[in-house]
Amino acid sequence: MNFGIRHKTLDFFSLTPNTLLTPEPRLIETLATARAVTVLTGAGVSAESGIPTFRDALIGLWAKFDPAALATSEAFHRDPELVSRWYDQRRRRTLECQPNDAHLALARWQKRLAECGRQLTLITQNVDRLHQRAGSKAVIELHGTLLVWRCTGCQTERLEEGGPFNEYPPACQGCGRPRRPAVVWFGETLAPEAMAAAEAAIGECDLFVSVGTSAVVQPATGLIELAIRRGAATLEINLDPTPISNRVDFALYGCAGKILPQLV
Ligand code: BV8
Ligand code: ZN
Image 1 (cartoon, protein in one colour):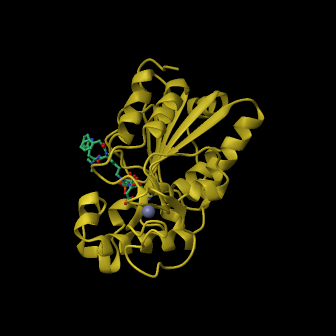
Image 2 (cartoon, helix red, strand yellow):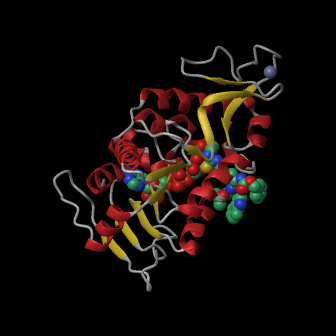
């Protein structure tokens, strides 16, 4: 669906609880008629659940580390205890958090579209599984998840939803080798099946929505470029403008937890 010249509604406003969203009629029309919606989320969609965005993921004692430096297999091999402690602290914090109104609105939207023979595919860069806990189905996790840990030896994976490990890094019960979080580190390639599913969803959507991402990390950001090139209608919902803000058809700025429930 192409609107000829790309209209840009840069509504810079911060939604307070009682501010009603007044998006332009063409956005309402696009939302109401879209047959196949593909949504890509980033850390900003989990911010209102109390999970720091990736840029702020280093709070307290981690403040002295650069996240991209810790989120690498080199860092894990250099200091497996430090890196596994950082990830386990994020895992346990994630388990204490609840899905917020943005997660719940996306799950409701997906359910509502399915009930009338349309579809919403959710692709996430997040590793917290809050979309799934909010009820979203068939979530494509581009960067894996903190909640599954994988043996570096026999590759056995196990869902970890309990308390702290008794040693760092935790050892594999089968072969004794160290286990790591089943996330995609910087410098590691994304799971081919996740990328293929994401590219297919972008290929068939008539509306693409980017929510809560700084649109910097590759190849996830490449998916946004693909949606723009394909001519799907494109909407960005974010706290701040990003490198894609002047290329999308519609842009709404504010908290996803306030904007999404009103849109849906
Ligand atoms: C790869 C798991 C092949 C780990 C993560 C091409 C060009 C340039 C660089 C590269 C390139 N190709 C590869 C690279 C290198 C690298 C990369 O992209 N670097 C970046 C920094 C430039 N990519 C890779 O290494 C990828 N692998 O391509 O393999 C290869 C290999 C080697 C060399 C070349 C190619 C792997 C990338 C995956 C890394 N793993 N996560 C972990 O979590 O610890 S990514 C990690 O960062 C997070 O998962 C998250 O996805 C990402 C951060 O991005 P965002 O989600 O956008 O979060 P961010 O904090 O940045 O932004 C939050 C946004 O929300 C903000 O804009 C804010 O305004 C907004 N917000 C805040 N609150 C709210 C809100 N919005 C709405 N409401 C709110 N309340
Ligand atoms: Zn093992």
